[in-house]
Length: 302
Image (cartoon, rainbow, N blue to C red; front, side, top):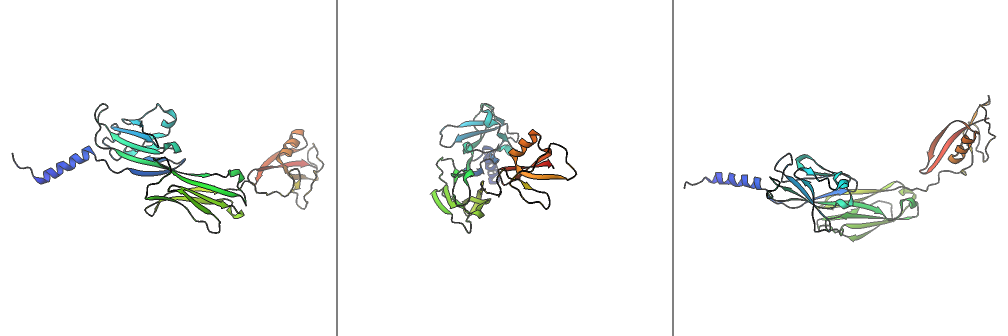
């Protein structure tokens, strides 16, 4: 038998390597709740994905669930199926990511529906970064203690990062924030809020090998800031030269006289009652002061 050139053997080995595929390391990917993420398939055979199968292993579970069969999204799980799609190079696109999406995703190739698996697995480990305020957002205001918990939900299910990853809070100058490391991927920030913390952004970051992989923000918006100095039924005249009054002016159901029109800012409830009873006329126009207090401008004839 004639000798086979070494260069030909090298080429043959390379071709077989590409055809059969080689199992590589698991790819780690991160997302925030509500974001979209695309999980790459690194062992694609047919670009139309007709050979591709995606399976999912839920965090903390030993069973697997098939999500994509030979290029088609399984429709037996309607709610989840609506958030899954195949992207370029047969990547699995997950929209509106949720905590239950955490787990190990595996892309496999089958040349025929009943044939054996072709090549190795392409594994993607999806972790989800979350932030939670244990203090009700409606209670946020100066001198209230706010506690924020930042957690990376992982395939292990116990908020434990791999050794090369860690969580941290971005320092805020001029605050009295205290940080507690509950575990490698579970970190808590506690701070007594001050007036200047209204609408302040608090940032938790995930770092790996010195690089920020992903971050998540929480904005402390105060819901109880007094911006009104008069009682809700008081009247504030907006006629130039007039002064604020604590009693309503005499109202008329007739058209405005030659003396003009008085615009009064009163509570929304009072204005609606007046307009419905016919003691106010014209177009009422609502506007807002603060975040939750609605007011309206009523037009009265004098």
